[in-house]
Image (cartoon, rainbow, N blue to C red; front, side):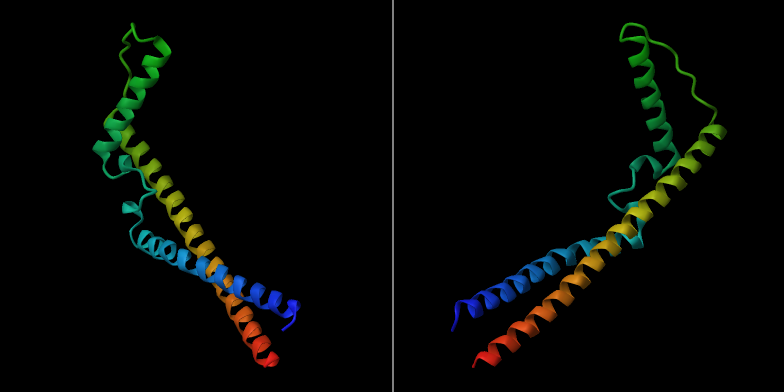
Length: 140
């Protein structure tokens, strides 16, 4: 067996091994993305402040307090102006819809990019496996 034959086999098997590793590590990401697509609001990318209006209101007040404290300094406590519930509810609905759309897009992008990566790795595996098996059978 020549050195070139051994190198060709090592190359073929190495590509097969790498593609198998890619496929094995892509499957959990695909499963996670499928579960996230089925319930975007409970996925890891969705913020808890958009789960309910009360959460949003508390986060909004906390954020406004931090901003006013930072601007005025720690000594001067300034009363912050919080919009009425109707205005705050409109802000909540707009931000919630925007966050949902962004999260849904990110999950879809991750799912399809992982799916394409898995598909390409599978094709490379099949091609190289057939090539190596044909190469080995031609030697004998």
